[in-house]
Image (spheres, one colour):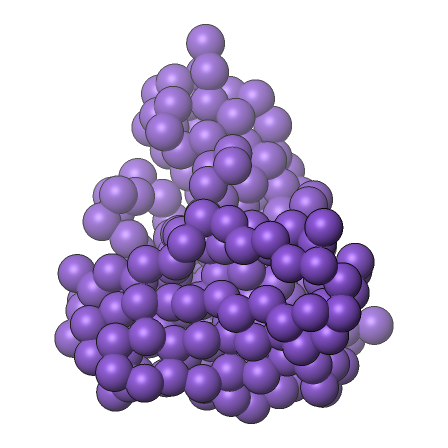
Length: 109
Length: 117
């Protein structure tokens, strides 16, 4: 089955840029979606189809991908961005195609 | 307001059964596929089950196949997950989520199911 790998944690100072990675075999051929989850809350879609922002998602959030890595970039980080972030793909080669990464905890210093 | 609200979680003994619910509001429920996704304490998200818009087609993760059953009542705008033969490793927050072609565009806050003796 398809595996997505995310670093467990990333720390960033306010106003700086956080770069979150999501590794998967040939992920450049997949559509990648990103969710933000704050403690005790529901996940929220922040980027879909690699680099599209849903209504309500700040412009500071952007996505990209190349080769075996997808990236979520959070510019001008704010305290309110502290959360867990999960990447997800829809792997058509799998019987059960919804695959999530293990998540990255973003800590704002 | 567009939202999903889960309910029905609780403490159940291993081997027991529980049915959880997800009430949808603010959108046309019967137009959407729906899913259950669970999250064990301190862990990541894992897809559990899906139902198409009228409930005629469902699928399950291998870990719950034969034990869990997803259903929906479109007249009540409610999604259900019946869980039988529960195991300790089924302990998790269960979220319902709305499908939007390959992704989930709306999630509920979840309901905690604890399987323990």
